[in-house]
Amino acid sequence: MIENKKILRRLKIIKGQVDGVINMIEEDRYCVDVSNQIMAINSALKSVNKEILSNHLRTCVKDSFDIEHSDSEDKIEEIITIIDKLGK
Image 1 (cartoon, helix red, strand yellow):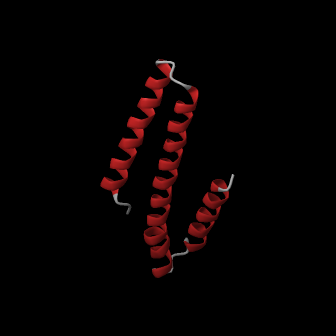
Image 2 (cartoon, rainbow, N blue to C red):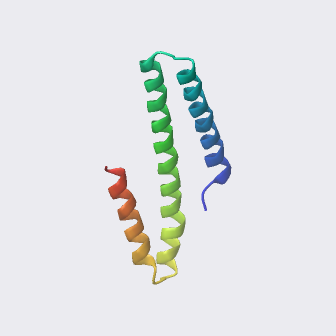
Image 3 (spheres, rainbow, N blue to C red):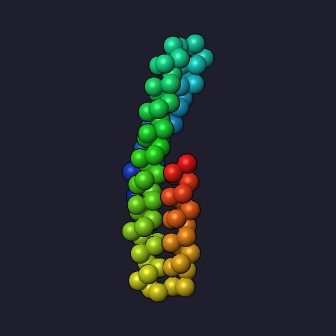
């Protein structure tokens, strides 16, 4: 299980950043400033995603091997699919 409180806190911060970008656009702020904020949001989302995937590997995937579930191969394929998506 992921550390829900930590992840939720970080996502709420990101939500505030997105609201800030919306305000910047409504206020017709300088495009480069808006772009910089969007890049910061992207970076924060990637960081949260990394945390979620890391926890997934440490829990769900690890457990599938420890218990020798038949879904171990499925868990590996899930991770490979996600890694492929991250590379695009």
